Image 1 (tube, helix red, strand yellow):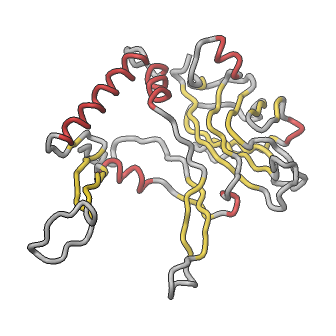
Image 2: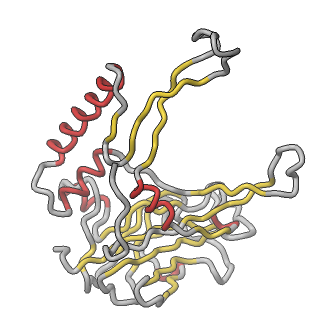
Image 3: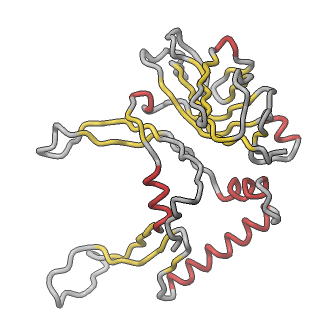
Length: 265
């Protein structure tokens, strides 16, 4: 399995997560609360392959996906043939589930079954441990869900044959595009708008709805008031938008972290 990285190796600052609290329903624990991480978008194998290709990998996305599928099938075959599998990201083991009635009890498919168990690598545990959370009602159900920040509109990406946004170059000063769900900026509260933060300096700017070129449920477009310097940036969408157009009394927020690179074309 992958080992944890030493402190000397630089790693990008992980994007923080929003945590929503709910009261415990367990007997005797009525005064405690459980935390639920909200709004973690997923990407699939095709998107991972496209990201690798855009970041300079010499293999075509189709080749990467084909090789990945072959490796995945071989993992299934190895598990069927009696092996546990260590594939760097973690280790897959087969474990027995169910209660046995003493040392001489036999395996009964009605009471017992085997299950896969994933044991994360030290590096994966290290990565998760570095992520910081923020307890906030803004991370509630039906919050805005920004998925991509791009220099191109969806139509331009389709015309260019791109399946995922290209890296954002340092010094870029044309409009930025944000794609996702429930993004529309609506509401009269002063905190409503798009927040752009440079993680390196901590400088933050607010783009209100009247400064947005595009403002829809799935797409936002605006010009950054801050110069886009190389490094990690965070974009927060704060809105009272409800798809039924009955504004939430309290605004809801969704966040995404993106990278501005000196090496981007």
